[in-house]
Every structure is written in structure tokens, then in C-alpha cells.
Image 1 (cartoon, helix red, strand yellow):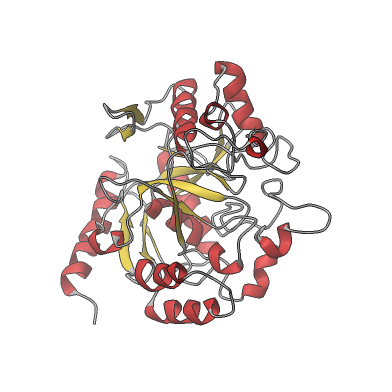
Image 2 (cartoon, helix red, strand yellow; image 1 turned 90 degrees about the vertical axis):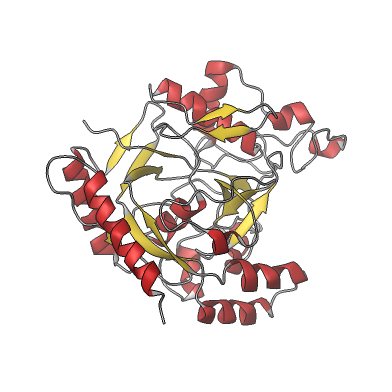
Length: 360
């Protein structure tokens, strides 16, 4: 039986969406999952009209940013979905940690309310978009300073890894490929630069320990929270994937080991070359892991806030979501949680950005 107190808090939170989103004209309702693809587009259009903007807006890099409405959804996997995934896992040669990741980290399914509309990249950040950052600032990535990619070391001495960087991640790329082989810290440097370029408030500053702190109230570019990422990925669905539960359909939506490790080419592929999800977002499943704002903690869901959760206040590793081209269908599910250290870099991991809404 659902907790009456949580239901009451959820109802109050949804009322706050209407009260805080925009002064003046009554705001549209929040997008409460489950909802289908037509309803997803209708929610986006209604909120775009209400805010005096468009569903898709392009910034000065040519990056398409898609408006998502505020809403409510179930984050994580249901007990039935966890049981199914554990049976799925038996077909895969894996470490015991995979069992724990499914049974412990996904199982605490909980209601989340996102009270504010926001924009998210239609695709993962591309090589070409990052190139504009490097050319404008002469930025040298940590990967290059640390001695190479495919590593979590601050000093990488393996000469075989030296050549791996964002320009040459280990497979051939064009400017339309998702960026990879950079650290979480490199990603934050990019988002702060993009905020300044777009004349928005930067979202991060350095702390005394040399890490990054997210600035409260800043409306510029940043990494998505884990909750924002899953809400965007699910797009109203409650199934294993944003298109349903039939894994045979995954080939149409994702670059993962079955589709991306071929005789002709092994690696990520150009963004937006598979089908989008109901919100119009590409590669939410597969291509490269998408790194998020939140610190990783196995039991984070047990302490998760109902409204606009930002994850644990402290930690070491950061969350990564969505699966990657070298990973399996199991890892590409909407609920699957992964994590990497801030200095880890690989040809399998990249990111997409979010930002606040600017009305016209």
C-alpha cells in the first residue's frame, strides 16, 4: 500500500509546480507519468506556449536544447522489474557487483517531482561542439595533462594510452560523434564556458579542495541531476526502455555492443542516427555513458528528496547513465546506474547538458 504521507507530499509538490513556474497566467499541468508520446509532445508544446518560447532552441554552438515540462515519475525499478533483470543477468558472465547493483541500487523505486521546466540537449555533446570550446579558450583537457585516456590515474605512464584523447578516442570520429575521453572536471569547465558564452550565470565554482560546487539558483549550463536524466530518458514511460520492454527493439534506438561492435567499425557513432524517445531526445540509450551531476552512493534512493533531488551532498565518484557502445542491452535500461571517478576518462563515456529556461 502506498504511503499516504508521501502521496500527500506528492500532491502538494505538484501544486507548487503550478504556483512557482510562472507568475500571471495559470500554468499548464505537470507531466505526471505514465504518459504516451503524443501526451509528451503536448506537454512540451503547452509549456513552451506558457513560457513564451519554443520547444527547441539552438544556442550559439548550434546545440539544440529541448524544453521539458515539470513533472512527476517513478524513479528506479519496481520489484518485478528487478526480478526480471536479475534473471536477465544470469545469461551474462558478470561480477557479483552486478547483482548487487540491480537488487540494491535500482530496487528502491520512489516518486520524484521536478518542480521546474528545463532544457536538455537533444543529443550528447559532440566532438565539434567541444572543439569550439578548445579553439576559443586553448583549453587542455585533464586527459591530456594526465598522460592519456582509458584511465583513472592522475599520472598515466602507459605509452599505449597516451594517444587516446577527445580528438582520437580509440576509433575514428567526425565532429558529429559524441565527445568522449574527457574527465568529469573537463565537462564542468565546458559548461561554465558555455554559460558565459551564452551570457547566463555559471553553475559551478571551485571549492577549497579543488573540487566543484554547484551554485544555488544559477540558471546556466550544467550536467543533469540523476533524477533529471532519468525523467528525460523515460519520457513518461514506466518500462525498461523509453520504447517499451521488448529488448529486440533496442537496435532501432541504441548503439550498444550488438550494434556498435561490428566488423566494419567498433566504437560510438554519430549522434541522432537512431530513433529518438518520446521527448525527442536521441541516444538516451547507448552510444556513450552520460555523466551526471550527482555523487554516487549505492543507497542514495533511500534518502532521496521528493522534490528536485540532487543526490548525496558528498562523495567520491559521480553517476553515469544510459549505457555505452561497448556495453550490453541490460546496461542501456532507463533505470541502470553506473559511476566513475571525476578523473576517469574513456571512449565509452560522454555527457549532455541541461540549462534553465529563457523566455523570448
